[in-house]
Length: 242
Image 1 (cartoon, rainbow, N blue to C red):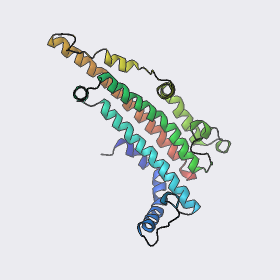
Image 2 (cartoon, rainbow, N blue to C red):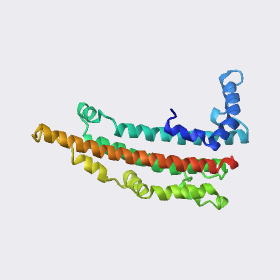
Image 3 (cartoon, rainbow, N blue to C red):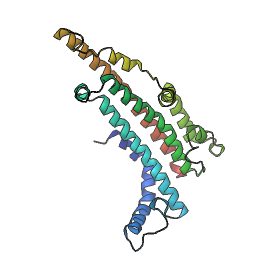
Image 4 (cartoon, rainbow, N blue to C red):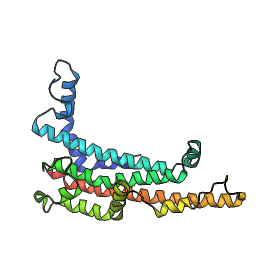
């Protein structure tokens, strides 16, 4: 079964990129694997002609996006782990902080896809933006890209993420981020060492907590699928310019 994040490998952009770059990678790896032909003054990542380097840089940016989706799905698996409660107890971790940490990590990475797409586009269109200055805003406002479909798609992706962009800013820069879903989970975590309850009531709280966790995982899964669709369309919108 195809793993979700591998779907972008089926885009026309990815297929064309792989076809055009595989020969370059094979040749360059062969050169660097041989001590007699390995250059002594240049790194592998910067070896090649101008057209070859462009493809290598594009491929690396594309690969970063693919790996990001893999990490997003890994975060979802942590949130959905059946043994999360036991893991937290065995490692003296506050259970609610476990969910808070992974949710914040998810938001940071999900919103980060905007800038990763921009950096890929920067390489595709040879805009010359520095890695530090290249982001969703500078990319979508570059005068060389007026009317490009990729700009429309990335802006739509930005609008879709909406409040998550603000949430990321709070997490990264301000601190004190709170989530209503995490708060709902927290309200259903009962410390039996502090509060004595009947088995029936304990089971009820456990079921309620599980229901809230399922809700969180479903929301995360929905965000991943929508992000995948935006990125897939963003890639294919640039295929003819590759």
